[in-house]
Length: 165
Image (cartoon, rainbow, N blue to C red; front, side, top):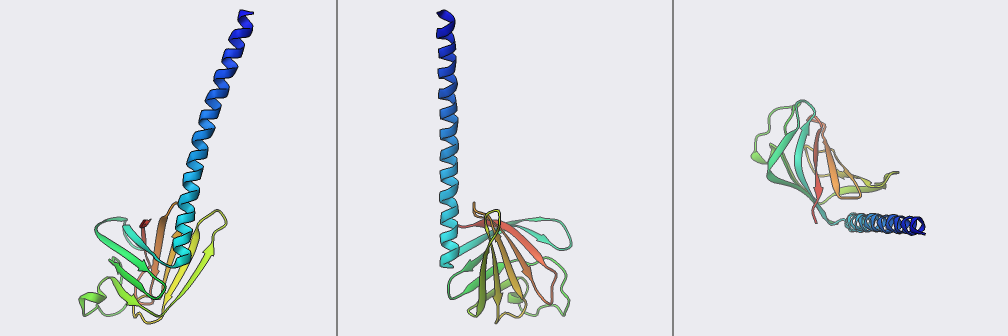
């Protein structure tokens, strides 16, 4: 009889622990699903800001960005305030605005493609910007984002950061 009570107590303890662990995983999954839905809503509304934390030039190592650099997307404009490190294939820019990736565009193409394993690939093609040909954002469901900027006159540069709340 004592053995039967001990076995029952052990089984009860295992079931309680399993329920607690599965409840925690469910809470984490629910939080991740809510975050993913919020990110998707921002992308669909075309109203979000990408905050850059690291820059990875084509030639050279990754750099931590100490200043506040961002890319703001709305339905009617794309505003970029990003640095540039890399090789330029034409004469040096003459004005301070042309040194980095700094522009405001009101004419641009915007295309969103869902990725197979979650997340989105967003391609932005500004039509009225001299030095930028294409911006490609790779957004994860958690909001972590990678931005690749390509140009006809400069090396490609990649930024890593997050989508602002």
